[in-house]
Length: 250
Image (cartoon, rainbow, N blue to C red; front, side, top):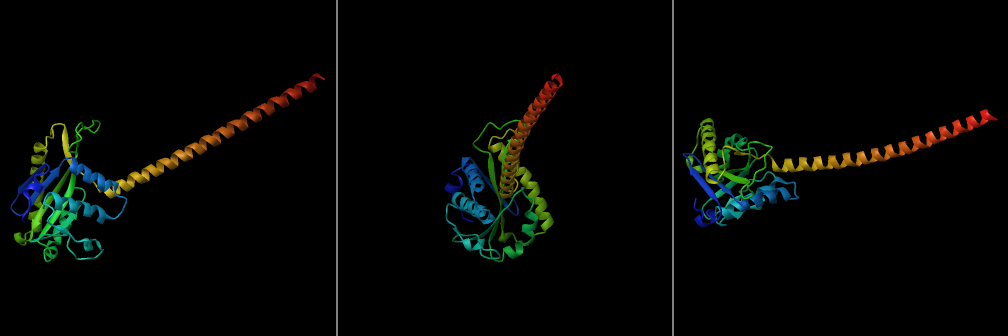
């Protein structure tokens, strides 16, 4: 695969070639902005977030030489994600690190019938091991990791391949952490969950909080009305007692 060195080096970048695959990663304010775009996208469709990622990798890793095939976004379509002058690439944008890699690689023979490469991507987030502490830096909070699998590697035992990826991923993540200035004594790079679901859950929680606040206000108003009623009843009782006392004196 021919990529633009200038594009790849236009922001912090690290790569590692292994026997049957390659790791690449980007981190910087640009990656933070990509994550913000994904979170701010009003569309609920996974395709919108997927396409933002594909465009980012195309620009930063392939120097904009690829063409995005939006027909891929049609449900059930077999069209390819990205085509360059020499290669066809299918992207997989997933959450929770390598959790769903097994399912993707099970279908690699089918994918490689129409694609030269599989780009399996996910985000890592930089944070403090002590969750009560706040991370001081704002420059590189998120890391975009892409694992590249080539059709040229041929058929491989799935279990062996997954074990190899898992082992190398641990080594690679440590390399990236050190290269980007992560203090491994106090900080770590941890998996990012499903951004769409997290955003929707936050929205649901916010809506629930609003409803609870509204209910609290209604209850406060009811309590005030009850207090006013009780005061009036007390005044009436006092008036009755006063009148009774007057009658007794007559």
